[in-house]
Length: 380
Image (cartoon, rainbow, N blue to C red):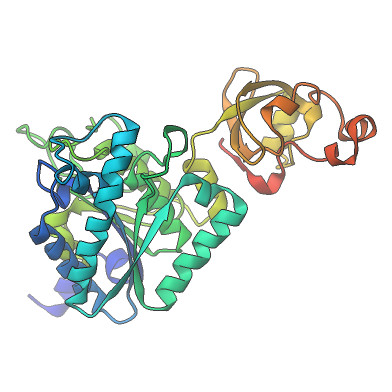
């Protein structure tokens, strides 16, 4: 095969990438009963180390597996459903997982660093800035960050929900050129890959390529939380932010990272947006909502202005200042999301009143926006 033809058979989006985020799921690292598979971890590290041999390459690894790794030591036969037991398993398993990665990367003289994130670390301005600076410094120091959700302390209300979504957001956080999603399925298919007559989809260039495709849930191993649906959603988040995505199996990791045509390539559909706003739009489940009158909807959506108390007609939920909330129209449709500047309990007496009126009646500290435009992202 000629060199020219060989080049044409490789994906330029992959071969040209210099900063790459790789996400691997629990089922690709563990046995069905939950113990870490040293052979699988080493195989993944071999593939990552080979790509790191390309000059100028930097890698970030988003790795599931902490809860799954903690099952066997705790005598648990399957992933627990209750949050406290999940957190106990994560506490035991996270050390085992990172310890195994540390030993495996040491074979190549590579240093790794653990980064555990919660939603608060990525949506609140000061926390977000620190997460960004830490990741940047690790990469500058030639350290490979290993990222996971901080399952030990996260609650149901403040979880990313799955590491596929976390990986897409981390890719944007570190200004990655490529996101690689590794699982136990080798590509996206137009149906159940276990059934005859289904076909692999090599390229996705937009939502139209996914029309009519049945996308499944979590895999049969029962040790993870994701599935093909979460991977497609993660690919949408990343590609809309200008980052191409390769979806394939962990067994094909080395080939995918070499740029060979394996798995499914999701082509970029958008361009980069302000990073923290992407996190705000996708990282957190909101704690409540503010109902806007038509004038406030126009001000926020069309004119990109801050939300003032005068334009809000109702409040739902229990939240504190700094929490993410949805801004909804009269029909209850979310038109924007933002970080609110007041506790929910403070708002009833503020609604429908101008900031000048509030300052005169309650003090100058009330002459401020409910949601500042810098902490607001439009959803439509």
